Image 1 (cartoon, rainbow, N blue to C red):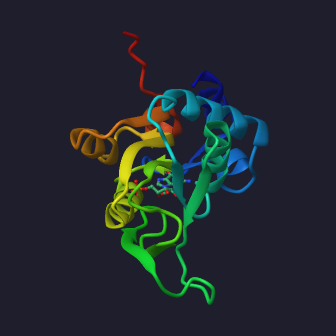
Image 2 (cartoon, helix red, strand yellow):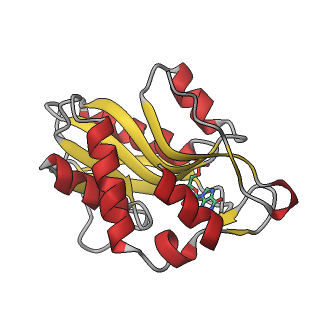
Image 3 (cartoon, rainbow, N blue to C red):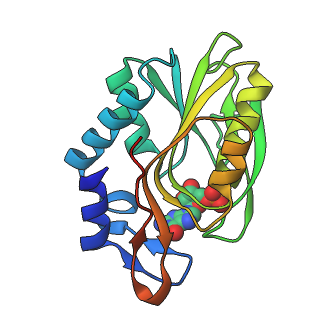
Length: 194
Ligand code: 5GP
């Protein structure tokens, strides 16, 4: 997605050879116009998949997931990272190791919001080692629903998550794929048009 790549080039900050900071439009501030276009792009890519729910992980996946769900005419379910007084029982849970925080946390959703009849699109902001996506897939599996695909705003193609998920036969759609962050510069993977 050209507009996203331009935004990353202009505003992204390379923190190390494996971490990109995009706080100005995705992780801290949110650019709603860009998010809307991201939602339209995911909806187009999964338009024939018969999606009934969009599932994401708090907090940075929420904006692109809501915009995608709006376009698809379905609701968004947010997997919560912290147990709260209102999220107490009848949960599906999975363990996720965070690449950026270097800690493992339990993510959960209420059993009320995804059922065996659902066809779920998973959306997240970044794909690195695939831990967040695998945790969300685990939750969908527990519910008996189907994973229709995974939509990622920024995939770091030099980390193994994307390949591991695609090798399992899952449709993974990433709107920008980064080939490397070496030398403090963002290099995108060229898209091959068929
Ligand atoms: P994974 O679970 O695929 O290893 O990592 C994906 C998760 O870690 C995303 O939900 C995202 O929040 C975070 N993450 C991974 N790499 C980056 C990065 O380079 N920059 C930012 N801002 N977040 C990242």
